[in-house]
Image 1 (cartoon, rainbow, N blue to C red):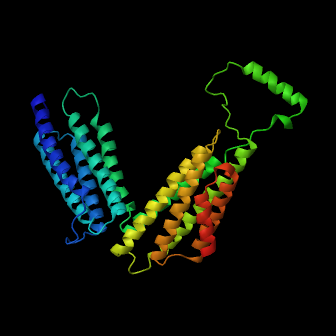
Image 2 (spheres, rainbow, N blue to C red):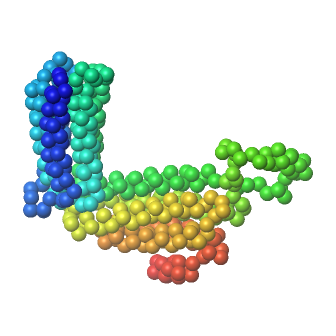
Image 3 (cartoon, rainbow, N blue to C red):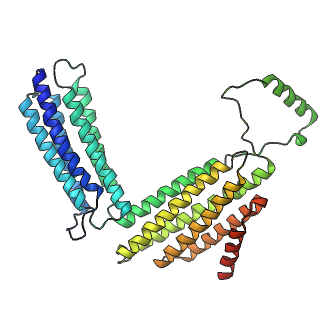
Length: 364
């Protein structure tokens, strides 16, 4: 267990790591459609084998078999298994769209990263000068590999499922913004206070003068006009949440269609996700603009973009024959909410948006 043995292990490990790194780069590109698709079940089976091999590696490091030869043999077995795991993972990407490919890539990367940590840190423990107990460190590293391999079982295995989950994540984000928006409150007007309340408030202000504590309230309360804008914005975001929920329901119904995974439909589904993510970004922008002083022009721009994204969503879903009555109704409700928000913005209203709204009303 001398210095030369440790250096030997480091060299051997680096060789394996470089090989896996080169193979992993294949996942940056989708395989050609002419290749035979590997089922996700095969990926899961290989993931189980990787974890079992990690368990064996943990037993080697936490036992008394710390001979260099035994470690190298176990290392070779592990990385051969990891190499096979990468190859089947690459094969599972045949026919995968951008969203599913991204999910597969991220899931596989977790297994690779946890495997690299297991071996790098285990080898660093080798030698008498090490102060850490492998029996405490290695089991945690093996557990991280198990977590990564187990997460594979929760990953979507089809394009439509991956896209549906990604849209669900947009809904979760929108819901978080809505919750924050509902926490906004209107400040009380001095004219509404009784004389003694005004006196107490003035005295309090004098006492607090010069207080620059970070804990001090810097005035997030809205004026009456700002509160009306905020309430309209809340109505818009609430309507957006309903639109996304109905969209998810429509996509779920597409799972029953035999042609749901055709390439042409896949492009429409990917575009639906892109439009939803665009709406999600505008909801973030809208929420940020509501804090005083409110940014009327930015709110106007966000509402216009939401309207445009909504048009695109409705058009894409129609191309998939997925526009249900319920979905069309929540879309109309969102347009009404956007129009009300524009009314509250007053001078910031957009003629372009109003024209488009009139066109939608006439076409309906």
